[in-house]
Length: 65
Image (cartoon, rainbow, N blue to C red; front, side, top):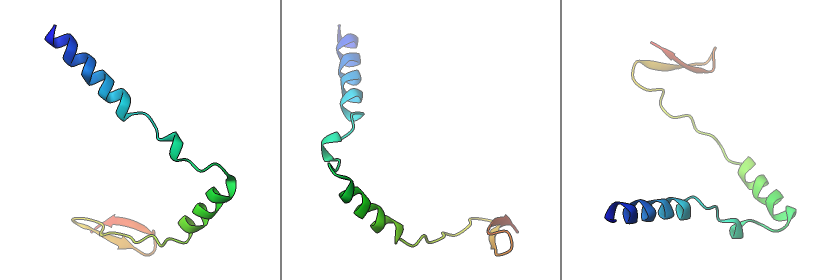
């Protein structure tokens, strides 16, 4: 009985955690368009390539040393 209760609670927990927050979505397209414009103006910053790698200007990617 304890196992069934634990399995049920776990399944309900996953179901609740997996539901999207649909009520937080914008109702009109203008708001979505404004948000997209804000996101398009962000600058992507490249992080370090990692151990034994460096950035290649010619290939525009990380390559092995």
